[in-house]
Image 1: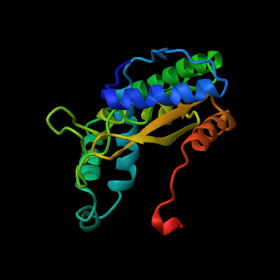
Image 2 (image 1 turned 120 degrees about the vertical axis):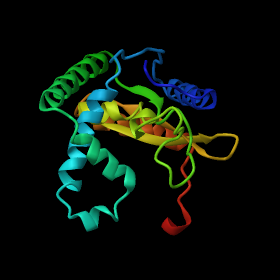
Image 3 (image 1 turned 90 degrees about the vertical axis):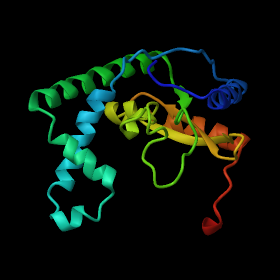
Image 4 (image 1 turned 60 degrees about the horizontal axis):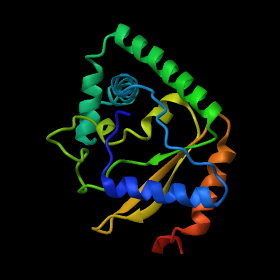
Length: 197
């Protein structure tokens, strides 16, 4: 659909699909065709952020992440009619994904189409991106739709940065997501960080 993916990330997703297929899943390459809900999610997210940020005193906002404050300021430009339209689109995305996931038990995709970018930046490519939604296109639709989802580490890129796969199912089918994640974990256990050992 509207999301971009690096070839190495796409290859990792295809590898995870082969693992699920070997475990008995019937795998098909499909597009849930939900359109591009970024503007709707931006209006919803920014309004939620503003609700918290703009209630803080100015001296507290000065200590906050600048991009969070920028998001809250952007929310002040959103008209009520635009917010209502975003709510309508959220419902449409939820219904569309609901119909899709009535037909398919699970949707496997990248967690993000890229790997990590430098610490301290909010955008992978500040030249072409405006908001975090621009690089998080595979996950935010499920925030909008309220469906269970999980991200799971699945390999690394050439620089050694982790690649994630994303599993999503229909509402209230959390167990389906967890079972699929368990299949992946049995094949490629996730090492615990030193602090967790």
